[in-house]
Amino acid sequence: MRGYMELISFMKALGDGILDHLPEDQRAGQLSVEEIIEQWMSSKSYRSSLSLRKDIVTYIRLQESGDFSVDEILSWYDLCFIPERLGVEEHVFLAEYSSQ
Image (cartoon, rainbow, N blue to C red; front, side, top):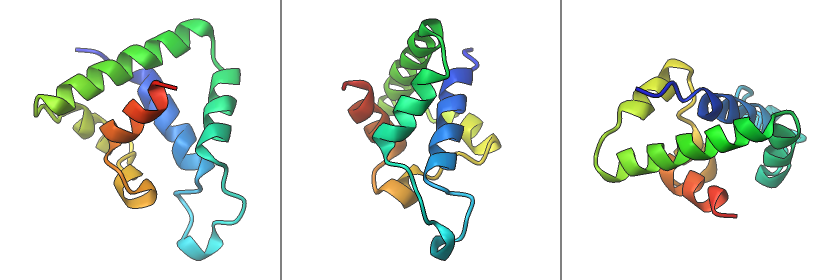
């Protein structure tokens, strides 16, 4: 089983960038998704970006087949915030941004 460490790292960066840890009324200075991606990529190696892409592809494939085991892993790190904060399911969000 994959560890999904790059996906976890990216999701943590995304949560920090959109200030998910703060109450709604204290979220000033949120970064755009593009800024978060740019910052994450600039701090990682090319190999890490390839690993993230593989994590995302595997995650999307599992989601589409009805296997939600990666969601369980993300929940261990309290990283299941995308539907609430960004209005789409995780696999839809990741598919959209990984294809850019």
